[in-house]
Image 1 (cartoon, rainbow, N blue to C red):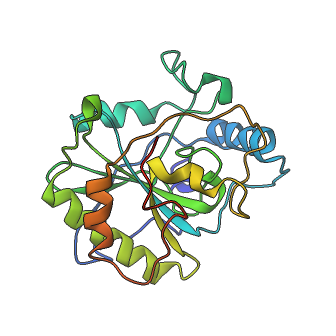
Image 2: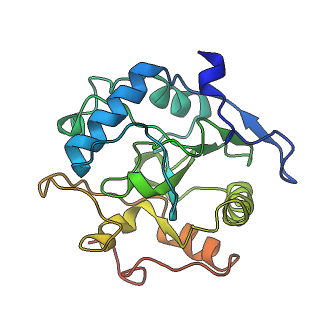
Length: 221
């Protein structure tokens, strides 16, 4: 099982200038099969594996200000019973490729070529970065987290030349109707305000060569 989880796309701890902590969530064959079911149900695709080709990075906040509590929401393979907002979307629990603590410490939670459930419609072509914070929708992500996100986005682009977009979670619906949007359930949508317009503006001011969401300059009504 351990050999199965630690895929070739798990980043070596000192691959980048910043240290990447390896903090793997449970990803057994159970989660893989649940992911395949999700792909079939939501994208109408029959797949042999859950590997992706990333075309965007989606930046989030966890809506919890504590790292341990945030991480605990992603560990289980099946969705907990206290997520009524997305339980209609299937039994697969949410996941993310990276989580950034409030002090800027970066954790990799899963292989980068596995699909994570982190954004409606765009999971099959995106890498997720969750930032600890944003509880009660506060715009409280830190300078250290911003620096870590800048670093991660730049390094991911070096690793995957297929990545074209960097978006905030609140911008996901901008892609409805595009070739990247795969969701087949027209009723499956949720409101998102993370990580904040302020944080995304500061991130975009420090990165180059990426497209923005088609409605990046609009508010999330």
